[in-house]
Amino acid sequence: MSKASTAARAKNRKSGTLKRIIKMLFSFYPVLLPLVMAGVLLCGLINSIGSVFLQKALEVISTSWQTGDWTAAQPKILGLVTVLAIIYLIGNLSSLFWNRYMGVVTQGSLEKLREKMFNRMQDLPIRYFDTNQRGDIMSHYTNDIDTLRQMISQSLPNLLQTIIVLATVLGIMFYFSAWMGLVIIAGVAVMTFLTKLLGSNSARFFIAQQMELGVVEGHIEEVMNGQKVVKAFCHERAAEEDFDERNEKLFEVSQKANMFANILMPILMNLGNLIYVMVALAGGVFLALDVPNLSFSGLPFSIAVVVPFLNMTKQFCGQIGQVSQQINAVVMGLAGAERIFELLDQEPEVDEGYVTLVDAQVNPDTWEIEEADHRTGLWAWKHPHKADGTVTYVPLRGDVRMVDVDFGYTPDHEVLHGVSVYAKPGQKVAFVGATGAGKTTITNLINRFYDIADGKIRYDGINVNKIKKADLRRSLGVVLQDVNLFTGTVMDNIRYGKLDATDEECIKAAELAGADDFIRRLPDGYNTMLTGNGSQLSQGQRQLVSIARAAVADPPAMILDEATSSIDTRTEAIVQRGMDALMQGRTTFVIAHRLSTVRNSDVIICLDHGRVIERGTHDELIAKKGYYYQLYTGAFELE
Image 1 (tube, one colour):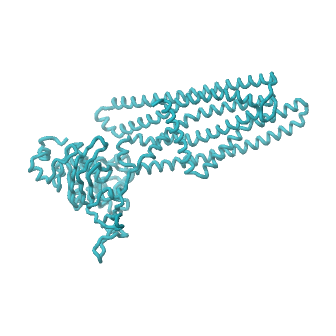
Image 2 (cartoon, rainbow, N blue to C red; image 1 turned 45 degrees about the horizontal axis):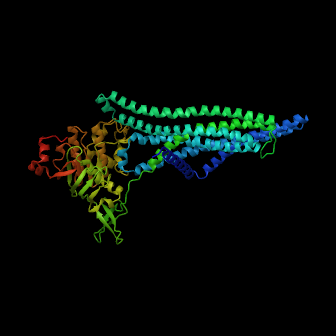
Image 3 (tube, one colour; image 1 turned 90 degrees about the vertical axis):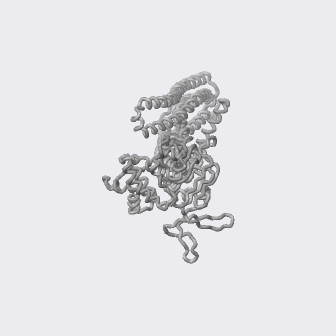
């Protein structure tokens, strides 16, 4: 692809981004934004007309000089000054208005935009977060938003005002003298060429700067999260070298971006001075040669025309310099906006489900299940049938079946091959296998973090694709290997599993999980504030809180992904009793490397490279003396 076509496509993209920003601002403030723009326009017009009054004043002085009658000139000059003072007062009030309310528009728009970004982020599939660094995603909310703020609050109003001043001053110039105006146009053509040449290079590197900034912040966030690992393996020097490499790339593009940006202003200022000299020389030549003036005003060449023209030349070139200053901020703002819009344009998680989870009750007359308008403790799947318009209610029992499921995180790399899993209500199903065998992947498919490529997954006899994802996940309690605790009290973190749970329900869940004892020993008990992902708790205590969080939801099915991996042997015995009570009567999927935790499972499924190679109870698999037997007896290691 040619450089010309690439540049044209980039130009169209930036133009589309700018249009989208303006459209977004108007949608947020359909009344206030036009008023602010009117204030900006009024300021621009008022800032442009000073030379007109200067020309009128010089004309009065010139006439008085020729006639010698200074008495008549005084009231005229006083009138011009008074009118100009009133106009400038209006301009100051207008400037005060638009600057005051531009802050409201800017910060209000950014507030709404952050809300849109966060809401969109909540709608994105897990795949997006698995394939993007968290630091880079955070950069959307910090650096990209900040560059957009600067563009909206400063650059766009200043550019609009500058364009008005330029257009007005240029019109006044040609009104006074077309010949002198052509001299200005020739100089401006050179300035425009240089602005475009240097500005395009600056823009390219500023866009690259925003991308590299996201990479650097993503790397910093990654290293900060793994600082203990860095210290444990004495990886400090290597971490510094990795950071220096990324930081050097950021330096290179930032240095080039700012180099082009910084040399543009001095070049334009010197060109402006050169144009000023050219206009002065041209005016002197026209006066000396008594060249007829070509203008709309009908005024002849005179000092009253040339002097204001020089003033307008200085103003005109200065405004072009202002444009060059704002270009960099606009380009950075557009680069940040593009990244923000990329996030907003991400395809949300598709949910075509129409089967919902509802409170249910048994009709005493017909003994059929029907929907209840209050909490009953009985749940059912409300299943509308599109074919005949009827609705049936299927009791929520936790019957999960996977039949011949194929799946790959990418189309060219399949990780599950024809996997079939059958879990009857109340059964405990354990997955055993080496890392990468597909254990966690299966649980990700059950709660539809990812969708299968082929096969079927049925929940209580209903295809999971027909069940709304929120309702499906509400019926599944999950305890993950990686614990995430949020800023708030211990009680808040337990209640995260069920937002309307009472304190008593949360405490009961903690007792069930075996967490009540250590929680009560905390400084403020259940009201102890947790910060930094619960950093003041041990890894085992954090896991116990997460287990209590799953317990308070009281779901009919549970997924325990290495739930006891971070708990010592003594604590494991405590937790195991709570886990057994938690799993009682629930369909449970257990992933564990400690084979002692899966001995009492109803079904143990052995996986190898995405395939089911053995299934059965502990005793059955030991009797087979196959893969599981070798794992259990230590013939070879699980990892």
